[in-house]
Length: 181
Image (cartoon, rainbow, N blue to C red; front, side):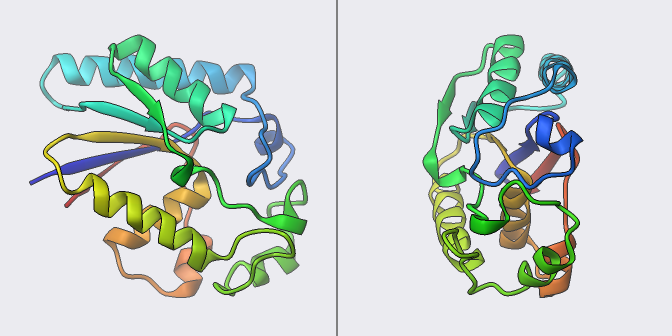
């Protein structure tokens, strides 16, 4: 059975200050760089032991994800490329606001809403499902390095869930998740 792996970027400055990053290009903190380097070493060791096989890393072009992927590529020697389709969702008017804001939490459950200048969940799902469909067509094993919002969408490709479950789903910085196709 084919596998695809997913990880979220390391800690960012806006993660620390509880702000929504979205499509805004926010860099990693020193801790975020350390998390990414540690994940790279963990993946390298797992690959060396035969516990894990990855052929290629595909990263979001936003610096927080790309820098995380670069740490992993440096540790493992894996090829790395970016793909615009796994860029974080544009949350429009909510970018830079509190992640736990009540209005954002409510609006996040409306999948057609484009957040005034942003991108709807439905449009996000289209681009994420398209890349996952494409990646499932060959025999390569991919590691996607992206964002929390992208994780929710990737997870929904593999698992049914309610809108409320989708809206509340999250992944920790540099957590590694395995999916089988």
